[in-house]
Image (cartoon, rainbow over all chains, first blue to last red; front, side):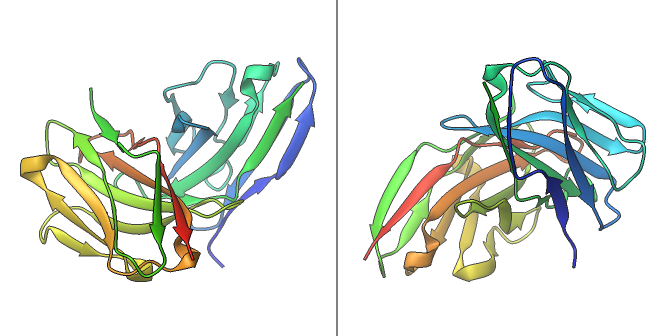
Length: 112
Length: 113
């Protein structure tokens, strides 16, 4: 089954404790992206990747890192999480920016 | 700046009534436009997309959308809403040469039985 898999679904952590949210897709998509969803703000892009080893900042990259060492994986790294990074995070992938995105089921992160 | 705007934050309709969700875009060239739906606790699912050609596009679950260049709009419609349509709906757009898909802020649809 074609899918984007994010883990974990829920994560509660404390300020400053490094964490990684994993994202994997099995559709051989070149394009992958991370979004955060906050009430009233819709989805805002954090980082995106056009292909392996090619990543770029989205609208709200501060406090986040990504890497794309393999085509299927695109982990999101929070080196030192802060409470303002409490949010719902989505990973998505597609064949390109003008192709429909396939979304994971989300990761709800709480930073205390 | 290139953008997509959804003017309605919340909309409530009765089951069986017709539905129209508004989306306005601001792009220099004709954009690629999408409508996505998000059910509670789920990721976003594509409803339909417009790239070019016929301005009335059909999607899944009985939805359709009409691209109107003169009004810079891409409104989503459904003739008869079902209770299971209650969800949040997002409009999104990108230009042909662009690398950034922009989402609207979403419209929360409530369906009254």
